[in-house]
Length: 188
Image (cartoon, rainbow, N blue to C red):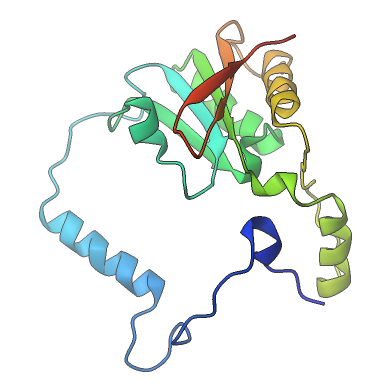
């Protein structure tokens, strides 16, 4: 058995040329070349690591979401923390704690989205992975079926964390991948 991405967003199309084959640049090679072009025209913006707007945004890593464009953000405006599902995990709390206590953020915005891959898998993913590689992951998949309820759970995890200094301005949203609109989720 092999665990693949095909179960998350449908079957993937096979590539005409295998990655890294002779005469073709790998995706990483293309990214490095793009960075060299970027660096050639780069000018130090003269800012530090503290976000101008004092906000940290936690969102899903889904490639369909251009987070900065969707929220009208510019370089330096916010801290962006992304993971599978945009769920609040221990590592998310670690990042938010550093963001608040060391770098001055006060507001937290949580963004999940419609059509999330975590809605199509279960915690069985961990068991299957253990069978395939011989070691059980130490992390939870954090799969969910109700996106609104998962946003509420994430908001509660932020609001109740003893490590976070600022939990009064925590808001959660669901991003619609078809319309680009945010829908705010309340506690009830």
